[in-house]
Image (spheres, rainbow, N blue to C red):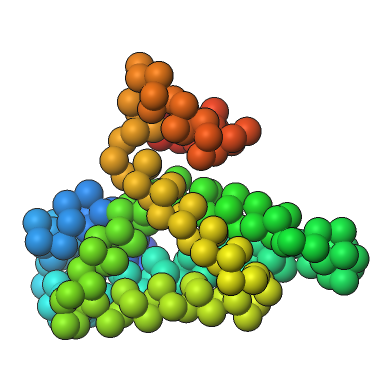
Length: 209
């Protein structure tokens, strides 16, 4: 008797493809990636990927939107956890400059970009700002993050600037491999230490994974 192949829903299959695309686009960049590589990474046929997403461009856009959505969801979950931990007014009173919330969001970001595909997909998307189709999606995603920090996290302008600037520095350090170089380069180690502070050992462990 022939074993039955487990069937999954169209939504689950779509998520499977987008997860594979995050890895492929992250590793290869937009230009070098192909729908065939994504299909092989997802363990399905290339025509099926094309049937669901159409062009490589549209697949990348959906991958970028998914990545940005995961980022916003992680931030909102961190804020919700902070609110559940105690009275919001008391939290604000105890931390008037919002540094505790910045720290919570920073930790959520580090956990998310442990997935190198997520980190690099975001970077590739932002670097394609001049592309007439992909650029607007990347800009809109970045502005969604800005609005969330302003309207939901309640950050002041200088906090938003600091948080986004730190995020870009983290992206550069992890994407460029400076984290890996820190084990044998004193300057790289010092830069990692002043960026990540008490989290540096954890970040270096992730960078080596």
